[in-house]
Length: 339
Image (cartoon, rainbow, N blue to C red; front, side, top):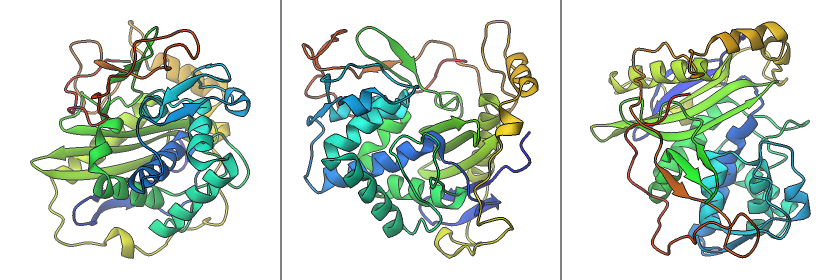
């Protein structure tokens, strides 16, 4: 287990913080960055600058991004709707850059918008240098700031909540399950995003709703897929069964803790042979990641997938066209596949 595991869980309606630890420790966001990318797109949609059926084109720069990626060729096109689904389910780095260029006009313009949006939200210890979360100097965030972002998404854009709750996507040729092991397995789970690089460990922002009450949690620096799912489930369960009439609000929580000027790097603990072996042994005989939280259930079937692929004719493989009425805010899925 990493030496630090920043975490926080917040009631969305009241903004009350139910539990937190090392919430102001600077951390590499990894693919949690894509939540900020999505939020910036949602703002552009609200402003009428783009629409869900706007075209996203894969540029040379986007296609050249390191994996995880879709390997779409330069010139390939997809709707913004499909691109968002790919971004948030498959966590494709190439599609993240294609979205940024298509929505922002250029990658630099979009990055400026991402950072302006973060500052406007009060994410005072966050900075983004790319839209996909690939590691680089000057990219960092905190558990507290990610909670601010998650709450903002849930409050401001309920019409796009379904993007974060998809069980999986299909491109017409391949199917990809969501990396979030809580969707369909934790009572009320409805999003949001996972992320991993060696330097940050296994990160997860999660949301869940029961009886009309929504909470969001952030877990950073877990040692495995199963570990971050367990920690997230435990936090969500505690929050959903705890009254929040008192306690700090997220916007008034005061910075605390040592080492806030440097960004934590736990590569040595996460990406060494022993740690990889432990993660390998953390799978069952069918290759599924073991989880230990009593609040995570097994799932009875494969994931339901929605189409998220290229516009037919722009590149192979060509899937079926996106239906005009295929809306992002699909019903919350019930079960989801095991890993």
